[in-house]
Length: 92
Picture 1: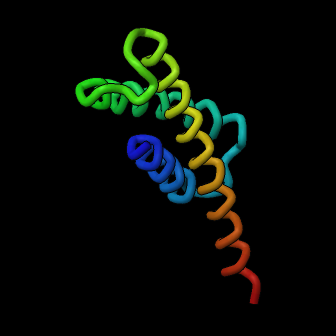
Picture 2: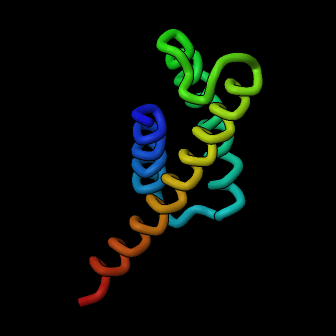
């Protein structure tokens, strides 16, 4: 659970700190790539402690997919928050 929260928060920061409103398809593809890299690292780190989904290749694939989706969700929400804060600042 902690790896999922960390991945979501990193995605949120990525979405909020990327300059300007990002094209959703580009955000999804870039987020998916970064999410897979983070998920593989976190899944391997979690594998040392034991995966909550079990052991074996299926657990690793499910862990990578779940963490990737959490990163993309965080990046998408971060991008929405960035747009909302920018609109709020620009209105007098």
